[in-house]
Length: 90
View (cartoon, rainbow, N blue to C red):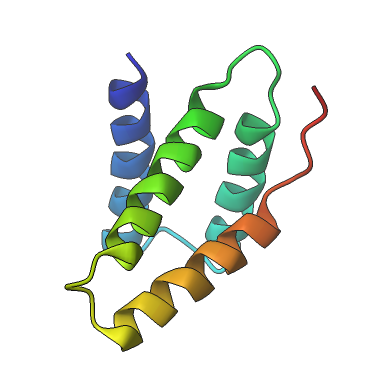
């Protein structure tokens, strides 16, 4: 069910972008939407998805086959996105 919902959100975002109906406000509104979904106490799916994405990125960065520039970019990206996440009280 969650995959359908996320792909639906992705479809709407991409449709707005490619049809030229998106604006400069669209990424900020989408960020606000994601922060509200992330901080929801009743619906932990978005938080779990971001956690799994972080674990996958860290696993890729820790691989010995990953070049140093990509490893640094992954760690910087993880730090940046983690800094954008709202504080969630349990």
